[in-house]
Length: 250
Image 1 (cartoon, rainbow, N blue to C red):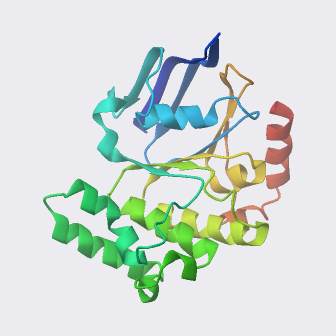
Image 2 (image 1 turned 120 degrees about the horizontal axis):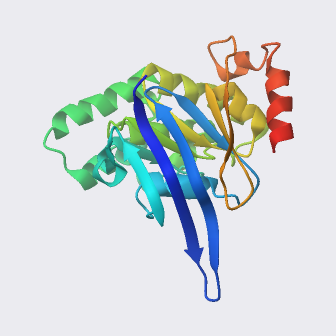
Image 3 (image 1 turned 180 degrees about the horizontal axis):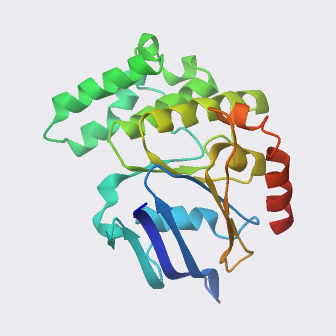
């Protein structure tokens, strides 16, 4: 399939008061349309830095990042970002939170996008809660709202920066299923940064394993498991073999 996103020989360093710290060195990988890719690696190796580069928050020192054949800086409207915390505004209702991005962007087709937002709330069982405040929802429901708020802007690529890390284990499993199902149903491409190897294996068709800092790609592991959801994929007999392989690489 055609490459949607490509890192080509990317270097990145942070400048401190006394030193230059290299986070990434000669980083090369690509993502194709409708991939669900996880990025794993040692703590502090630059996983979130990669998402910041894709989203245009920072620029590489060297190399190129391409989106659909063009510099990624020209395609920022195609990219959505979902952070570790849901970042819902407590003084706004669920509906007001969902349409926040539209209020900021003021698209010419506002009416169509608002109808799309409403349809997403109905499709993913949140419409009955649209007039509630975020504090009245469970952690899992809040994450679904945060994802829908991102989807309303109709990005092609979703960046997920450990979006389940603040949830307890049982809720985390359920929300992984919810988020995965929504992303697949909406035919989006996703890149997930996570410390959780099991989470990466259960959600991804491809896992990018990074080395310690300065990070390079140690291995790209293709994942093929039976099951329509991450929870069911964990029951595949091959799941343990993938876990052992990734664990040893790390």
